[in-house]
Each structure stands twice: as C-alpha cells, then as structure tokens.
Length: 125
Image 1 (cartoon, one colour):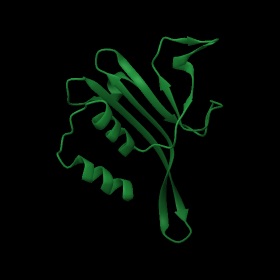
Image 2 (spheres, one colour; image 1 turned 90 degrees about the horizontal axis):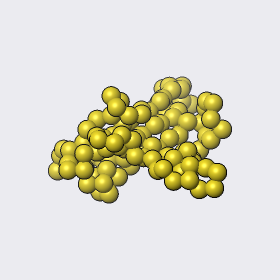
Image 3 (cartoon, helix red, strand yellow; image 1 turned 180 degrees about the vertical axis):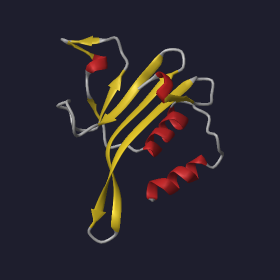
Image 4 (cartoon, one colour; image 1 turned 45 degrees about the vertical axis):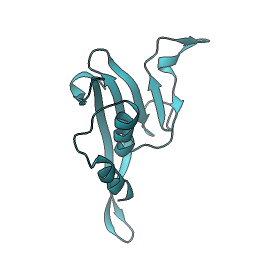
C-alpha cells in the first residue's frame, strides 16, 4: 500500500499512513448482527521515499503466513533472505495502535489536542 492509498500526516517528518481493514458481518448469538474484522493492512511511509513499515494480518489467502506480522523496508540481507521480505511477528493491531505509533514514536503532529482521549475512548469501545 503506497502512493494514492496513503494520507499525508502533519509534521516535519513528512509521514504518510495507509489503512485498509476488511470486515464481515455475522449474526451474533445474543446481540444481533456483529461486525468482525477479517484482515488489516496498515502502512507507514514517507512522502519522498514511500512505504517504510507495513503491518499485515490476512488469515485467508495465498500467503502461508496467517498471523499478524510486520514488513520493514530494508535493503539488508540476512543469510539467504532480504529483511524486507521477512514476516516479523507482531500482536494483533488496531487503527488506534497506528495513531499512537505515528504521533508518540514517529513525530507526526496530531490534528486535535484531545487525540489521546479519543484513542482511549475508541480502544475501550
């Protein structure tokens, strides 16, 4: 995910964020219809160089890797593998985790001063 799929973030670091989440709707046993996340693709990049980090979870499809993982843009070879092709394991992530990452760790500027409260509110929902 890069290019037109990403949104430019505020701040001197010139970061971009791309988000794609796949869902399906199921008839829940007690609460009626429920939305369940089926896959996600998050990417953090730079406006001038493209994708730097790509967080994926796609339990169905062609790839044998079905657990949450990270791809790092790196031109480094480790043994026979290029680091950029390695599936680095992660935990299950949500968009709120990506917001925290780009603001707290990568110096993106939040649009709102109350961003932490909003993220916390949606994390508990």
